[in-house]
Image (cartoon, rainbow, N blue to C red; front, side, top):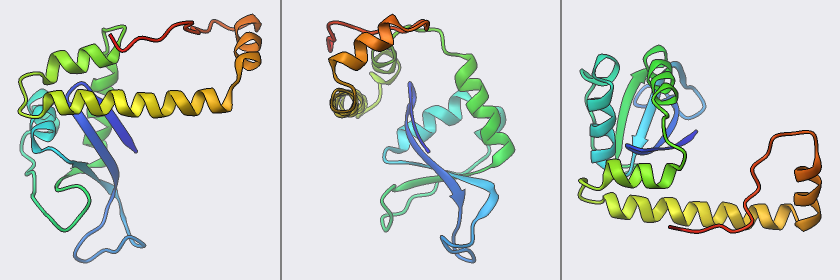
Length: 151
């Protein structure tokens, strides 16, 4: 699972390693991986009760250089905490506010905008204007922006 948070970007999956292979995983252990060590450090700082004592490893032979092994029950609590602390109405500015002091914080926010743009193009390819009108007139509370800004 990919998670874009205000602390950074993480890729999570069940752990495997020296004695395990990708085909034989440890379902009770989550490997939280990051491209930027500061993202994991920020997450550990925010959730010290669940992540504080865990060691961030460094490796150069994988697609994510910084893995953190977390028991699944602790990772579930971190995810619960991330959901509970959501108190903003626009994610991208919030991520910028939190990561601006990081060495590569600006790069992270730019990456968020690039991912957003890619998925927005996918949305437009999948749902044309007629689909948007149908959704807007349905008996559902939906937010359909008519103008999207990167501001």
